[in-house]
Length: 110
Image (cartoon, rainbow, N blue to C red):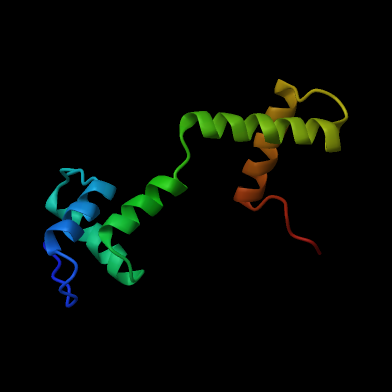
C-alpha cells in the first residue's frame, strides 16, 4: 500500500517506509471459513481484522497467567475467608456446591 499525500514537501516513499518500519506484518494461514468468521466479527465490532486478532490475543490468558490468577485467588480466599490453607477437601466441596447450583438443587431462595 502506498500513501500519497497532498503536501508536496512529504515524499510518499518516506511515509510508506516509516509505516512499514513501525508495523511488521505477519501472515497467519487459516481456513477460509475461519477468515470469513474473523472478518464478520471484526465488521460487527467496527474494527479491522488486525485489531480483532490483537484484541483476542490480549484477552486470552496464557497458562502461566491462569496459574498466577489461581494462586492469587487462593491466597485471597485463605486470608479473607478461610483463615487457613485451602485444602483438597475445600476444592471438592466447592466443586460439589457448583454442581448443585448448575443442577438447580440449590440457589433458590423461598
